[in-house]
Length: 367
Picture 1 (cartoon, rainbow, N blue to C red):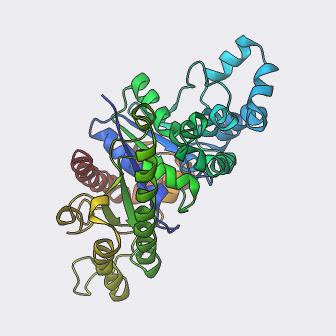
Picture 2 (tube, rainbow, N blue to C red; picture 1 turned 120 degrees about the horizontal axis):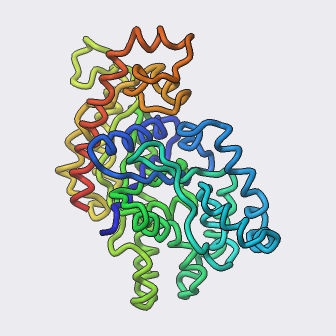
Picture 3 (cartoon, rainbow, N blue to C red; picture 1 turned 90 degrees about the vertical axis):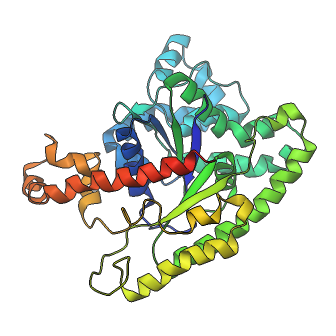
């Protein structure tokens, strides 16, 4: 059975997307799902959140020559040494580099990094902009049915399926940048569904408008492509165009006692109310689950909409979900009192994110 592929995306940075993605994946793991995270944001924020810097360094240094010229680097390495390299975790750009260079694909896939038993990660790399440039360069070739262009445009989805076949993932989550450029055009349209995290502000409202306009254009482009391709080449793309599964307000500061149901400052509350209205106006209904399901409020109710203050910084420092920090033996002496004195707050995040993840799964099942 193929996994569901979901992207978490907004055309606006600073909405806490990395924190949300990381904790959603771990909450899905708590619910018994096996999840693969693929960091496809050239800024690598999810990788930095998830892994020690030394680990990232070791992965990248071993790949440097391959990112410069994959075929040349491979020719200089013995078969045994290359197999050893492939038996260690590699970045997503390393996995995509043979496609980018137009060489033969890997004999077998490097293993992902196990963040725990049910949540795995393929780390990102700052050089991913090179793959994005190649997508832009080969875009017109897809209309002509050029095999390498199609391979370039669909390889990320095929990798998700190949990894799922090996490791039994139920879900694959693409982490992306806020850009509406060539890379994200493909990542969004190669996914089955996407979720929009929003700050209750003007920028998220306009970000949704931009997403709606982009989806409208991209759908027309892909409809044209599909009319021109043979059934065999068409089968490398998703059967259905990506659908919005919902939105969530996220990382909003709590203001109690102001008389609104979201406990937000008045200005933020006014923007929060505009989010579903903006989705309804600017995102085509055919590019979303039924609006009656996704516009009634944030996914998971109000479970994750408020800021966690300094809790995510501790989560990133120790590369653990917030709810696991009170019981971790890796906490430094200087942080023990801070975490211990707020352990109830840390532990409560588990319930909030499992509520969010449960609603997420219900919507994914409808794609």
